[in-house]
Length: 107
Image 1 (spheres, helix red, strand yellow):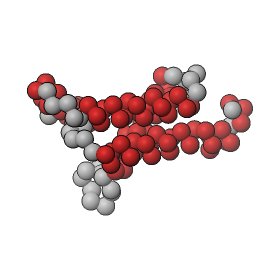
Image 2 (image 1 turned 180 degrees about the vertical axis):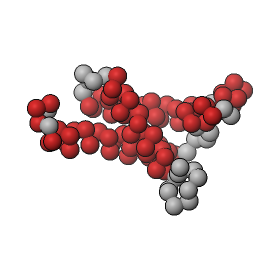
Image 3 (image 1 turned 90 degrees about the horizontal axis):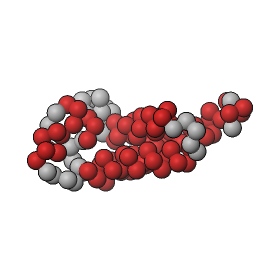
Image 4 (image 1 turned 120 degrees about the vertical axis):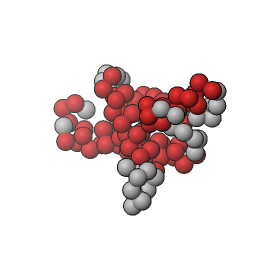
């Protein structure tokens, strides 16, 4: 929606994408430390962003599909790296400080 509605800043979509990656990776690796999930999810997000610099014909063709556009993105931006950092950091903080205070048994 951040690409369609002018009132929503463009970085919100990248921020939420990073939060989603953190949550998905957390689901698959429940027994890992939160700091490892933070690092891995940030590496995945940044890896996808840096992959946008790769301009092989097959990658460009894939990026023209709906799947490729949403998963791989279209162009490298340093501001996306910042949004991913804040998004994964936000998810990390939510997990470690808020949820653990609500449910201290799991700490």
